[in-house]
Image (cartoon, rainbow, N blue to C red; front, side):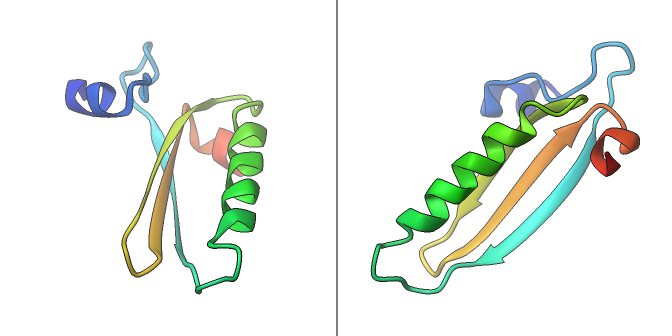
Length: 83
């Protein structure tokens, strides 16, 4: 738990229960003329929107050189994910 907090720089666990619920999203980016700028803009918009949702704790994302990406968002409850 402490390692995840240290790596992410945000508290990804509910302080009361010590738990969080995760939602995983995988994507594969195809080469684009804009170098993925449109995807990056949309990803930022989605992250900003998610941060306004009740129960949102944070997220982490990574993408490899071939365009495969994974985002994991952290939530206080399963209900928060489904909302």
